[in-house]
Image 1 (cartoon, rainbow, N blue to C red):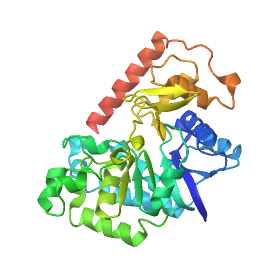
Image 2 (image 1 turned 30 degrees about the vertical axis):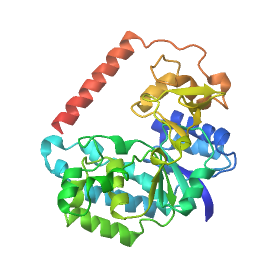
Image 3 (image 1 turned 30 degrees about the horizontal axis):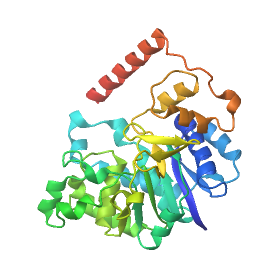
Length: 337
């Protein structure tokens, strides 16, 4: 068992993002910290080759753990109200293995930090990991600011249960793209207990959206009643920063990003709302509108500067037409599934 380490969730579809993340960890966190890649699915040919080229990176191979989290997700989502409504049932999302990121709780690191693959690491983790001596979950996001309609949990329904009031829940809301925690939380007996509450006690209604790993993770961290710390609610103003590429302004100093207000260092840049196809096209030299794309390209090709695009070109008319057609087909498939 290793004292500390980093996890991410990836497959070949997010290969470019994975390489950029690994390079940013090596430069901005530590050259020596171990990183474990949890497989999103079995499409891992490029990922496996990349892992072999890095001394501190491994592939998560605990199939029992993967199956445990897959089964938990599938059983829970199967009883969600939205799943039962045929016109809202989205098979490809409902069976999404996103909750596999929680295999981190079964891994080899006593303390760990999880990064979504569509992220860049921007600073060391010592302060964050030290807080795990007092807290069981560490987050750094602004989910607690969302409106009732967009919150991860259905606050009115939870309040009606009598277990919690909104003010008790707000500070505990979080995303799942970046978090720190410890091994052995969510043991099999605890997971079975949560499943009983969700399915037999119908607390699945507390989870606003089906298929969303972050929403289910919010329920789990709330219901297990363990101490949570969120840097965006820290009493220390130096801890409070942005982290989202398409929402927050940052300053680049030597390819490390800082919060524009006060030049405060950030833990990571999260490229949420951009598809893996966007990054693949960008890396092939296409002019894709991604905020902080220069920073992404810097880390993606840090070890392969000769492959970095020297000039970005707009997509051809045929490419645009094909993408629009495929997007339309996918929307139709979802609407009739």
